[in-house]
Length: 49
Image (cartoon, rainbow, N blue to C red; front, side, top):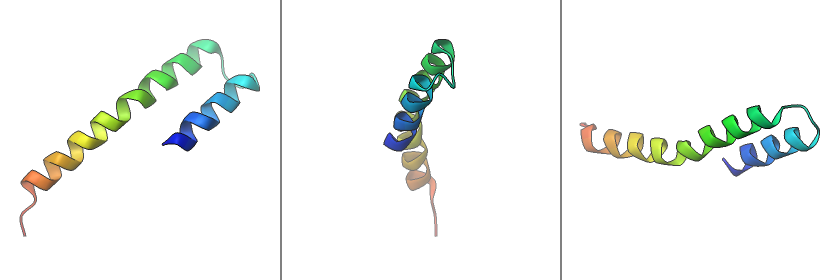
């Protein structure tokens, strides 16, 4: 995930994306760890073998 932050920053610096796009992507990336944790927790709680 840190690599995605890095490439997003590089895209902003190289002016490949606008400031608005950068802020949007950054906001979405910041939500990911919690969402992934929730999915893992749900899967572990409901996984039956």
